[in-house]
Structures are given as structure tokens and as C-alpha cells.
Image (cartoon, rainbow, N blue to C red; front, top):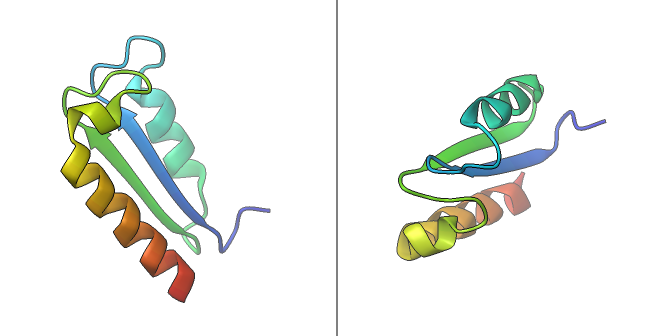
Length: 71
């Protein structure tokens, strides 16, 4: 059902609630036919990745959305 869809996962490297391995496993399960991306945010905590890298966060999310909307 997710095949061919755009999927962008953002995970902080200092997330204490969920290990990075969870995001990595989910990312691996997204079909190759999908536009997928996993960004591991250095020093990002759970739900605080924007705070860890606000400029890069905006740039990456906007770039992903722009590409996803043109597929």
C-alpha cells in the first residue's frame, strides 16, 4: 500500500524513547519504488529534532516536499 509513495523519516540520535534501529528497520521496509529518505539528526531528541537543527530541518523538509510533489 505504501509502494510508490514518498516517505520521509526524521529521527534524533539522542532519542531516548525509541532507538534509531526502529527508524532504520522501517526505512528498509519501504519499497525501493518509493521515494524514501531517512535523516538522523545529530543531537536530536524525541520530538525535538527541529530544535536541534532548525535551518537544516526546514531545508530538508521543504526539499523533500518539493520533490515529492513533482513525482
